[in-house]
Image (cartoon, rainbow, N blue to C red; front, side, top):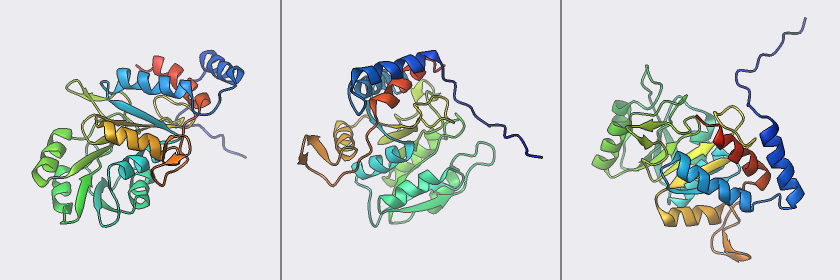
Length: 245
């Protein structure tokens, strides 16, 4: 007897998403283009209080590029929760830094402020809280610790689209936030991610790093990646954004 698999999360996709994809295909512009830029603008205004947004091809890419754009690299340590998806630690390691795993609160499963304090060394450069299952981490205490020790804050918001604390949305507390649009999230573009930041220079550098380090065509300022989002994925994300409650 073969057991039937029951999916724990199923994306809600329908005729609106299908129509949006059909229109992109008919336009002939299927790579990064106007749909991506529109998605960035709409996500900014509707989800993260108007800060800069840079769309990429996954939540992992959002974390990785955000770290690179923020200057994290070899010799740095970044404190991350011990209970999280592998992408959180992987992105830190890919940037050349060392992920340091701190304990989580047994009630919220987000970073325990006391464990953060105990994990700080002279190499600590940043704290990366993960907002889990739609529940924001304890940002009041995390911000206080970061301020006390002169540390940066990077937010993993892969599971917390539109979550907020006292009216302030996640993805706007730190240097940057990173969102995922994988099908198990509360909105999806099939695959995709978004970097959010109030720093225009980090946004500019992130946009270049996702596109081979280029701002202008064939003018490579940095060693970059190919982590662009496509207009096909962005068109799905735009429709999903209208359904985000």
